Image 1 (cartoon, rainbow, N blue to C red):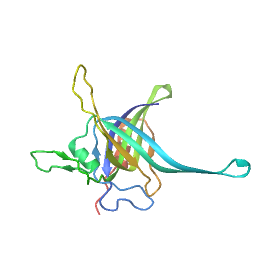
Image 2 (image 1 turned 180 degrees about the vertical axis):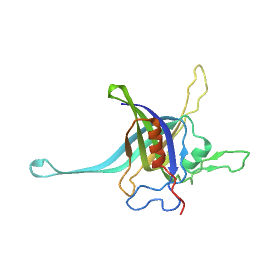
Image 3 (image 1 turned 90 degrees about the vertical axis):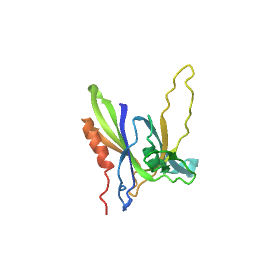
Image 4 (image 1 turned 180 degrees about the horizontal axis):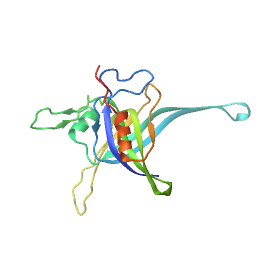
Length: 196
């Protein structure tokens, strides 16, 4: 049973040979997205049926379409938001304003993290989760005064995961005995490709 998620990382597709035939993408430099609060996915499929003799279903087909991945972190640093949403960050050292524009074009990238799991006999193991090709879009945010109570508000992004050239859209690792093994798996999956 999963009871915790940690270590949310994202990497853009590599500039050179980003999507080799029949393989997972190659990635650029990975970055930590922030302190992970929650990830939820919702795969979508298209399907069709055809009736045959006796008005019973004779054919049925179901194919993957895409997967919406909602990620919530305590806060996105402006550098992170610029990278995943494709918005402009001021380059002057004295200011780091983030500019959202109607011409923003978020890049494709890969997203990976790991979970803590409680198995039989109270054994704790770790498991990596990866979405190898997705693109982010902003989510709305509510800003409120303190009033008579304090409401904490986190930052959210919604990603649309699509299939890679090898057909994969989500990868789940085996169970690892240690957290370090899960971190190593995540880092290897998003490893920066060698230039050239």
